[in-house]
Amino acid sequence: MGFRWTSPLAQVLAVGVICFCCPGMFNALNSLGGGGQVDSKVGQNANVALYTCFAIFGLLSGAIHNKLGPKWTIFIGCLAYVLYAGSLLCYNHTKAGAFTIVSGGILGIGAGMLWTAQGAMMMAYPREQDKGKFIGYFWAIFNMGAVLGSVIALAINFNVTEVQSLGDSTYIVFLVIMGVGTLTALSLAPPSSVTHSNGDHIKIQEFPTWIGEIKAILKLFLEWRMVVLIPMFLSSNWFYSYHFSTVNGRYFSIRTQSLNNILYWASQIGGSYSFARVLDYQGVNRRTRALWGLTIISAAFIATWVGGIFFQRTYTIDMPKPNHDFKEGASYVGPLFLYMFYGLNDAAWQTYIYWMMGAMSNDATVLSRYAGFYKCIQSCGAAISWRINAVGTPYMTELIICFALLGLSVPGALFLASRIQDHSEDIEPEKDSHDSDKF
Image (cartoon, rainbow, N blue to C red; front, side, top):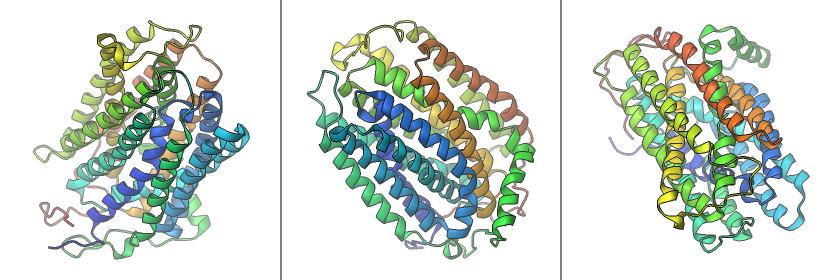
């Protein structure tokens, strides 16, 4: 069969390109620490505003997506990313921190809409045996955006070794790329026209009423499968403030931060795609794959964060900024590999979360609520962690909190993984399990 724009794979890849351009560029900026500004407090407080609003509107975005559809939900969300990048460019000239913080809050609203729509499409469009593969494809394309953004930042700032903010040219390039992603969102097909290779439509419930939709969302707080995953949701972005501000932003020079981020996000590409293939392995049942996956990511994060404890003992919040540079050679390699493994673990952790939620349903309407609930809890954690970072918490304390939250996530995930069924509860087993979607 030839290329079809309305195929599930084409639509998920299109969303990957959109997220390459918008959240991908945002991640490149955010991972520089303080959005690339010397005064990282403004970026940190903007992140607090961002994730606070993200938490609120993430929960409501399932209803918005189910009413507006993915095209307009994602388009509106992308506009908020453009505004935020513009506010950082403005800050270079005006030092108007209030505008950047307000833009961060608006971005929280837009990000809630974009990521809820993206999550619903990524989990609902593929067939059951392909869910891990689609998640891996999306995560690879999305994180290529952060890799490209970091390459751009490194190229522009390669000769900058002293502490200073990103230049205007960096922000302008990011704004242009985000604009391309925003316009691409207008090309997305409505879910009703998306069909599998055999002509089957994806499953979509009819939108009830706003009150009915809100009731369905609030019931998620009583659904045991969501409740047991709350610690995992909460921890899934908690460590970003530690990674980006405390480790990368504090320990390294500005150009080395960009180089680190190229490898951090590249590690996410490999980590998500390879781990997703494990989760889709058809040689064993889905429950076994869920348990295998949890064992792998638990072992990986324990090893990585134990290594992080030894690294964190080398500098504290009370010391002058070390400003280490990649040209230092051998002493740079160890911290670099630790940072790369932080990125790999992040990708595997979030891939597993999406795969678990995708195993609960195939209905785009239901999964948009799940995605919104996930982003709500995730953003609550991120808002708290960025505030902890902004008030000058000792670095080792930050690390221990991150490590503890990851550990507390395992029991609930194990409880659910041991109860995963081979087929989602809302469908009958598919007649042809080998009918993998193509373009």
